[in-house]
Image (cartoon, rainbow, N blue to C red; front, side, top):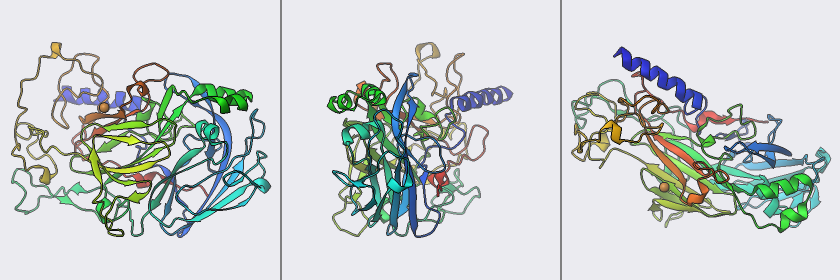
Length: 482
Ligand SMILES: [Cu+2]
């Protein structure tokens, strides 16, 4: 047993070093106005640089809130409540840049009033003076819940490419964060529906985590802002050749989730070595839980997005619940698919679920290893309780591993691996790649693997030390900037 402890400690060190765990998980980091009923934000446009995972550096235009001195990519995620009067003031600090020009913001799906600045083609624009006197304020009522995008409304083909776009989330009326996830109660219960070997029960925590209505409840939520980058356009803008930038058809060689190219997507939020790319996208859940996937497509390209491990059930598109009965909150017109297209300019919300049902063996290995593993009782209806893996695994010399294999087919377990293998799977979870199925987008400027790719980890209920493993909720990542 001592040997196992040592190897787990080594696993922990290497996984933390890679950033797979530790720090703030992905969730939906974003900004909220701390004043109840108020939704005021100040956004500044600045130039800056981001890093792609192949080591290249790309010139960007981005937005940031007052708590940050650097622009960020994508733009700050703004989180408001249904019914809020939203007010966003834009100040343009592109002064000094070779291609400095006016900029603006548009909020598709809302009836916006713009004041200040100068008239532009789509809305009022802020001149690049970095002077508050030239700022524009956009106000609108967040009159319906959902996942929305906002982006530049000026010279859009270039300014959107340069990074001026992000996500806006409107919480529905009645939304209430849960402090904790639904966890199995550590105390045995007398519930007769739970098998005697499994004396643990789920205890729903208070709260009302819904995306739209009662039929869109979730345990965790994650945001995926999908973008693509043609670095030649960025270089033209950097040297002041706006005519060249405007005339160029985008030819992306980088594809990003939340402003990062894989495998930087795995890192936690706010890692110090990516100061202008604060949002990770590593997705975590435990068997039986529901993950809300909010997807925002801000690039030029269509991305057929794969959620390995199970289908994604799409419940809303462009902030509209797919329901035949308006107001019911039930997405009865939703659809389930393994590949859902992220269409440029569109958002969609999907609910992802994963359980051991139908796996064909008991993923908890309760027959031999975890006689009282905490688990989701409802997933125990396929007759595999206590079942062993139904095939003989090949010998170790015949296997190829990769860093994410724990050495065991059982959740929360570790097996022997050859020296140098494994090491990135801290808790013995199951890793699934979530990615664009346009396979050319799985590169960083032709270097594989990378690009529009992240991971889902189905985590066990116990960590490598046998302690309860709690995945933090998105709520703890909300920041205030005003
Ligand atoms: Cu795939």
